Structures are given as structure tokens and as C-alpha cells.
Amino acid sequence: MRYIGHLVLNYVELYCKKTIDEEKRIFMSLEELAITAARQAGQLLAAMQDSINPREKAPKDLVTEADVASQKRILEILTAERPTDNFLGEEDLSEEADLPGLDRTVGAEADLKQLEYCWVIDPLDGTANYVHKLQTYSVSIALLNYGEPIVAAVYDPVMDDCYSATRGKGARVNGKPIEHSGVEQLSRSLIAASFSAGVQRGSPEVDRWVEMLYECQALRRLGSAALNLCYVAQGGLDGYWATSVKIWDIAAGILVVREAGGTVTSIDGGPLNIQEAKFIAAATENLHEQMIDVLNRA
Image 1 (cartoon, rainbow, N blue to C red):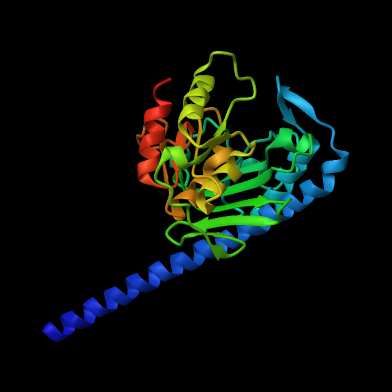
Image 2 (cartoon, rainbow, N blue to C red):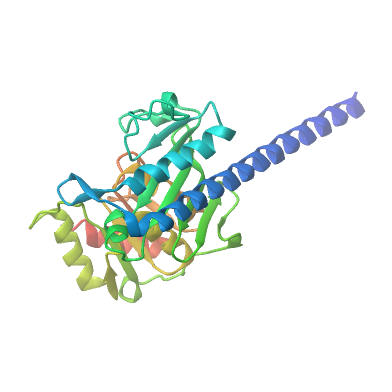
């Protein structure tokens, strides 16, 4: 009986290991799919940059035909491989009646924790930079499993860099592992922030900026939330915060930061609700705690 028991135990262990290995292989193939979609969309953006026609979807908030074309390309690529998944994208494509995946597209108000698989897409993160030909913009794609990012790809068409991650498998740029800077002290750190398009004089966002300006080594507003997070993951930035971005801006980048060993929480230090997108990301826990203290003075 003891012998049979050992056989059963060994079989269970082998089965579990096989199941885990298969799951990791599936996620890695999904990472490759996300990279393919992000790269193709980014290359399309680069090709269209000299012929765009920008318009305002809200005061100071721009959209171009390039945003729309990029999102369409991403949907075409993803739906060809994942025809039953859901999609949440920044741009409204409801008039594209024959677009694949349109019937499985959800709005920003959807409870993503109820969806087994949902791709969250920002077809052009940094539209104002793109329009003005300031070369800091990106394509951001994340796959969420019941509301949690499990696969990510953020592509920078200018540098031809693609940041990617799979939950539990680390973060990469162009296939090479990356890790954060390791900076512990706010006074030695390079920090970035994002403001809303219509930020008002005297708003908490401005107050936080001023407080941080006094405390960190240097402060930047670069224009692409997705790339800011990837820079934290790679060590180009030591920290980043935002209170006015959307889930499609950050879903991929947050996974990249976490898989590179960084820390991400809500702005007050509590657990992050990715659909609220008010957060602090930092290379180390010590730096993160110092950022929390400064940003919550305002």
C-alpha cells in the first residue's frame, strides 16, 4: 500500500508540474502575440506620423486617425489568434461594423474582474508628443485574467524597443532581462509624473509636483505613462506617479515594473485598483515609502 501511495503521489506531482509548465508555455506564447501586435501597430504609427490630422476629443486631449488605425491593426492580430477573448481599447471603434472583435469589446466601466481574458489596449500612448513629433510615444497592450495583468508588451517605435513581461517569468526588453535601478533615497532619484490634459491651477496634481520637486534629485513629465513605467522597470527612472491616467495607459507597464522587481501601489500606499489608476511605482520599497510620504502631503 505504501508503494502504491508513493506511485500516486509521484503521479500527482508530475501532473501538477506538467500543468504548470504548460500554463507558462501558453503565457509565453501570449507574450509573443502581444509583442507582434505592439510592434506592427507601432510601425504603422511611425509610417503615418508625417500625414496625421489631429483633432480634440476633449480640451487639450488629442486623437488622430493614427490612434484609430493602430487599434484596428491590434484587434485584427489579436482576434485572429484569440477569437473568444474580450477587448478594452482607448478609442471608440463602434462605427467599424465589420471589425473583428468589436462584438467582444467592453467599456471602461466594465468590471474586468468578471472577465476571464480581456486585452487592454492603448494604441498610441503619448498622442500629444506624437502630433508634435516629440519622439516619446508607445503602443501598450496587456492581457488581464480576472482583472490582473498576466501578459504585457509596450513598444517604442522610435527606439525600436519592445518591453514585455509574463506574470512570474520576469521582464524583458527585446528579449533581454531587465531590472530596476536599486535606488533607495529620494534625494538621489530621477522621478516622473503624469498630469491630466486639462490640469487646473492649484489642483492636487500641481501641489504634488511642487512637493516632489523639492525632495527628489530631478523631476520629469515625459508624456507616455506606459514608457514611464518601463523606464522604472529598466532603471532609467527610479520612480513614477500618476493620478489622472486610464487603465489602458498603465495595465502593461505595471506588470513590467512588478516583474522587474519594482513596487506599485495606490497613491496612498494601499493595494492598487488598476481600474482607478491612481498609483505610485518605484524601484525599491524604501524609495516607494518616501514617495508616499511626499505625495500625500498635498
